[in-house]
Every structure is written in structure tokens, then in C-alpha cells.
Image (cartoon, rainbow, N blue to C red; front, side):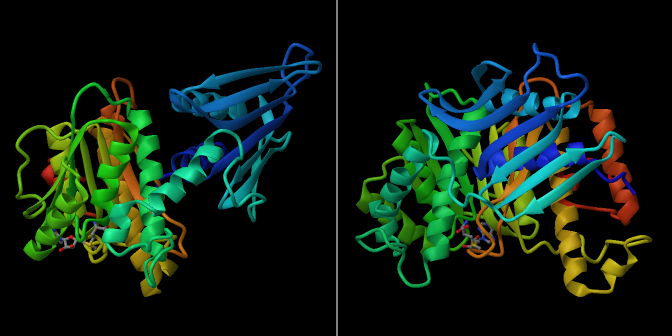
Length: 400
Ligand SMILES: C[S@@+](CC[C@H](N)C(=O)[O-])C[C@H]1O[C@@H](n2cnc3c(N)ncnc32)[C@H](O)[C@@H]1O
């Protein structure tokens, strides 16, 4: 069994997840360790800000008599905060719109974590949120959502469509953050592919998101059902979405004409997510965005041994364990292939049970050594008796 993550790792991953999922409200680090010198900050506070260059992490170092504020690119800011908690401060209070977490390191070195209900259910009211609400309202009123039957002319969801509207809103929001993290080259036309587009709600949302930012993109929705393709193409034409089109084809078989920059596959069943990820990786896509569902591949291979035997007694727990393993494995494979993998909540559970998002942002350089990652992969698969997994097979990664 791999070692359980320590509380500092949990802190970093909770912080990172909240940032990726745009649920981060603020963070305070306090109680500096050792002798608090006047030259050291007594507190470190962080909150998101929206600047003209995009979303940044605003870090405020509070000294005895003054404060120093600096805005950092997200990845740099998150790293600084994780290091500050690991080395400098013994208390951390993380506020997110889905829950709050208090971390406390005792003098013995032991760290405890206490979770509580969120004090803030709305994002921070500085910059970022001031722009977000109008942006979300404008999106709800966008003609494409009315044309596809998601909202009415007031921007309110039609009966049964509140969950889909929420997905579209979150998707556009998350996409913006992921694109910023990737650091796309906005001067060229991006090639974007949405695999398993269905009725095209989220494919239109993709085209809308690029259009709103003034970035040129060709968005292609790939869908196996020709009637959905035809309806979606008609809607795209009627709505004047010139860079958006849908094609009939099957994930894994349909081949793009050239390299893909952004590969999306939302709610593609079972191993279709793997096929889509593989195509994105093969194409050298900078950004991979998936929301996996119907994980069936590993459940019957999975061998649950001591001390997890009680998990196998209950079908639903076994099913969830298989889901976690599948997506953890996919995330790890993305890391091996040079992507920073992000796993976080897509929409709130009350809107959809299919609420996990797995994204990959291609890194330039760096990352952990591939040999270490491969040995972790083998250890995890060995611990659960996993012999094969679709994405691993396509990438020719050995599981044991
Ligand atoms: C659950 S829907 C998701 C639609 C859309 N991505 C969304 O999240 O709203 C899955 C869609 O994928 C299509 N699909 C299933 N297998 C496929 C395959 N192998 N290739 C292309 N499309 C596929 C289905 O016809 C269906 O429309």
C-alpha cells in the first residue's frame, strides 16, 4: 500500500483543488514557528484577484507594523503558500465555497485538520467575483443556451435544465482558468476538439468562451449519433458560430486534420475517456479536459486486500473505489506524459453525480522524474492487482 498522504500534502492538494475549481475564497497562515522575529511576517494572507493579465494570487505578508502585498501567477503563488505552511507557519485556515479547513501543527510536529461548513458560499467580492456574476448572467442569457432549450429569454433555466446550466457556467469558468495556467499563444488560431459532444451544450459553451475572450478558435464537436450532429450544425449556422462545427465520428477512430491544442471529452462513457485522452496526448494538446463517467474497466480486476477488505463487502464502496483508482491512474499517466494533472469537483454534487473533472495542463519543463512516477504506477497497480487499463495500454505503459 502506498503511504497515506501527510497533512501538509493534504493542505497543498486542498488548496490547489480549491484554486482549480474556483471555489477558493481566502487563506490565512498564522502562528509563525520558532521565535517570531520582527523581521518575519506574523501572518500570510492570500486571496484571488482578477487583473488585466488574468487571475492571480494576491499574497499579503503582515508584519508587526506594515503589510507587503504582491500578486503572483497562480502556480507560483500556490507553491509559495505550500512552502510557507510546510516551513514557516503552524496554523492555516482555508476558506472555500464548499467547505473550510483548519490545519494546526502541534509542537510535537503532528498536524491535525478540521473541516467545517463553509463560512462563505459565494466567491470573494474583490475583482474576480465582481466580474464573475455579470459574466455568468450574460452566459445564462446567451442565445445559444436559449436555442438549445437550456434557458428562457430571461436567462432562467427551463424545467429540468438547471443542472445543465450550472455545468455550462462552471465549464466556462474552469476553462478560463485552465487556459491561463497553460499559457496559450493567443496570436494563433487554436484547434479545439470536443469528443462525444452529444447535443452540443458544452461544445457551444467552448466556442462561446473563446469568442468572449476574442481568441480565434476552430471548435469541432465529434459525436457518433448523426442526428445530433445535424441538429447541432443547424443551430451553429443559425446562431452565426462560424468557427464551430460538428462531425459524425467515433472517439478513437475519428482523426483530426492537424494537431489539436485543446482536447475536451465530457461524460464520455467508460474507456471512451481514455481513447480521447490518448488522442489528445498523441496530438501534443496543451490542454486536456475530461469529466469521466461510467467507470467499468477496473472494477472486476480490482483486488482489495487487507486493510481495505471491508470496502469489498459493499458494492457501492467497491464501485467508488474503482472510480477513484481509474481516475488516479489516468492522472498519473498524464503526469508521466508531461502534463500537470488536476482532479477536482466540476459541479456541486446536488447538480450532478458526475461531478469530477480530470484535466491535464502540459508542462514546459520540470516535473518529477519519470522513473519515480513509473515505479509509483507499478506499486499502485500491484497493490490492487490491476493488470490492464485502457489508457496505459494505449500509451504502452507497463502496469506491474
Ligand atoms: C453522456 S453524453 C455527453 C454529452 C456532452 N459531452 C455533455 O457532457 O453534455 C455522451 C455522448 O457521447 C456520445 N458517444 C458515445 N460513445 C461515443 C463514441 N465512441 N464516439 C463518439 N461519441 C460517442 C453519445 O452518443 C452521447 O451523445
